[in-house]
Structures are given as structure tokens and as C-alpha cells.
Image 1 (tube, rainbow, N blue to C red):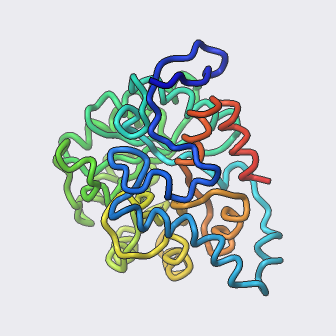
Image 2 (image 1 turned 60 degrees about the vertical axis):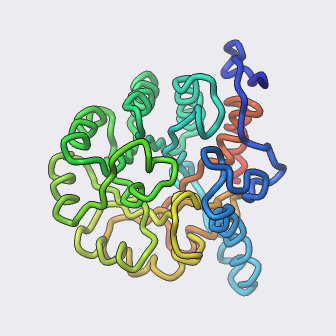
Length: 306
């Protein structure tokens, strides 16, 4: 068992981190590692996501000055919703992950996003972390049957800036044998919105049908995402999808966010230039947290804003 770094000055604890701590997180060190830090199909779309932002930048030299001039602020970045700290990251105890992850984000001033999973304690630990810091968060819930889903809405509502649904989560490989998830209809999503009483977010926008769903539902926030390459999708990067559909999506929602392969401030600027209002990231923050604690995670966040 590896020994973790000290988190915020607290004693270290034993873990067996699955991250390979590559110099650059580009999808190659953890190829196909599921459960773990990798992606489906040999991490093909994970790798594609990571490469696409810089490839777009390099292939558009006439636009590089415009991209470079994009001004960044902490609200342009958020921690992506992450659960499964034991099976996917390698923590010995699920609860140990949430407060350090959320606190580093909070102290850096970036957006806090919280997810759910099976069992229910994963969501509870996220809520506890947010509550303990007296913050609000953007909650993304998986499409459970409505009776379960609405109970989860009630649990997150007091600390929620917005409540969303991972519309692609029914297709997550690591969830298939753990929970019954559904593909929700537009009517069900509208009922979700009404019950939540909070701004609606739809995460997992990655097909023409998903764009049509946004046209019908008109979410407050649409998040272009292929779940970091962890769900079966067409072979396309989130950068490419954003470039193709951002302008259209903006007609149907208040904000467009994107995740997948964001690693540098150049990537963030490129995403914003292509139409994103904010980006989410997880793996680079998790890697930093596991290798150097909250201080290193804060450094990575700072570098992503420079």
C-alpha cells in the first residue's frame, strides 16, 4: 500500500492510488483502467479529448492571438463531479476524498460540482463537504428511477446553486451492475426541474439527439461531455463537438459548459473561444491531490488560470 501525502496538514493515511502520475495526463498511463482512472475502448475518446484542444490551437495559427487574449477568472473553471474514490481512485475510505477535493476548489475560488453514485453515501459525503465549508455547489445526479431521484433532489437542494442530471450516466460501464439507471424523457426532465426548484443543468450533451433535447427542454446550463471517455460514444472529442454545436446550443440554454481533456490555461482559453462559458476538469486535480495534497491541487488550478 502506498502512503498518501498529508491533506491540509492532517496525518497521512494508507491508500493504493490508481493514478500513474504521468508528467502529462493524456490518457496513456491508465489506458483501459476501469474501474480506475482510464476510459472505455482502450481509452480512445479519453486520449482524443486530451489531444484535441492543443491540436485545434496549433491548426489555427491565425486565431492564436485571439485565443491568447481570452481573459480567465476562477469562475471559468470547476471541479468535475467525482465519486467512487475507493474503486476508481484508490482511497482506502470513500469519505476521505471529498473534503480535500472540495476544499482545494473552494479556496481557489473555482466552481464546486458534486456527483452521486451507489451507494447513497457517496452523495452524502459530497453534501457534507460542501456544507462544512458553508458553500453551495452544482449537483449532478444520475438518472435513477424518479422515486430515488426526487429523494436525492431533496437532500441536495439546501446547498445547491443548480441541480442537474447526467443524461449519459445510464451508459457508464462501472455503474451497469450497481444501479438501475434510465434514459429520461423530456417530460421526466421537466418534472425533475419543477421539483428541484433550482436552475436545471443537463450534462452529457454529445449527440445530435442531445442537442434536440436541449432545444425542447431549454436547460439553464448544457454541459458538453462524454464523461471523460468513460461512456460508449461516437469517436469524437469534446473540443470538436463544442466547435460544431456551441452556437446552436446557446440558442437553447443560458450557458454552455464543457469537460474532457482540459489540462492547461491554453485549453481553457480555447474552450472559451469556441463558445464555452466554463470548463470542468477532474483527473489533473485528482492526480495533484493524490500526489501532493491540497496545496498541489491548488497549484494546478492556479496554473490553469494563468
